[in-house]
Length: 346
Image (tube, rainbow, N blue to C red; front, top):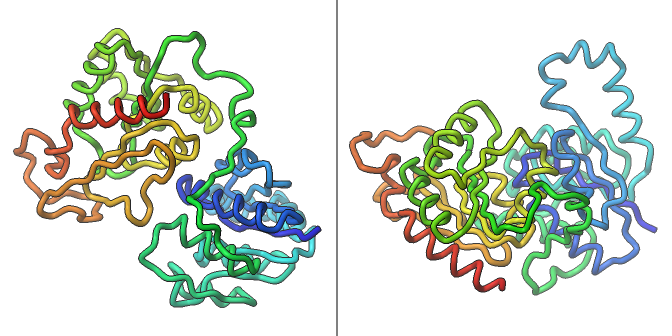
């Protein structure tokens, strides 16, 4: 049995984008055994795929803040020894960054990755024994599927991406008890320019609760917590979630009837779980890194400067909706599309 190491450490969306390539490879070459090197905060996700044998967590984000302590504690040595315990038949750096290339170089085996002109950080290519040119301008899922096929020598299936998640691994328990229908609104994101206007969320909450749904609002930091409570004042049918880890968030989303989202990593989790969703895109576009999967709809801005791909908006905050690129992506449109996707699943 051939053993393959996948190096894809972060982020949430990037890790999820790699799952369909695992599905392809495990179907085309049933004798493969996959291990996955991933950031410790995301270590649950690879384990949701039945083809993953061992998950090797790495803590680069945490170690970066105290490298001397990491060295002295022996944590780095323990990690390195675990990474080097097998001589892999193939090591695939699916990230194409210098940090992932360094980790790829530490492992033992035939190292494969993107050629310099295809990698996000061209210097990463120095780490590989085998380099592949995968055309840019494609969705990240398609590029990773093609990279795996090139490294492992098979043809990419003509079918759409299959994340291969075993829902029983995601849902040993339930995040929400009871049988009442509910929706999840993913209102939080790292860029302020990606935030859908609060007044729009409030209108969407009124539409959803009037239709008989309860609304759950997860959050990941203090500002998202404050926004969730501000939105919760719209209706007594809104629940602000407790602090949740990734497994609990996945259970919440998987058990829901539908999701409305901004451009955020949890949107990709929603797509991977095939939960009906509508995602709004203002300063960004879904073409290269947007959600992909069953029952997924996108609403894209046609504002004159969109997509700007910027974290700060230079437009004056005088419009009824800000950022102004969201102005025409109103809650009535989102609600109608979400209803369509929910009905199509039933």
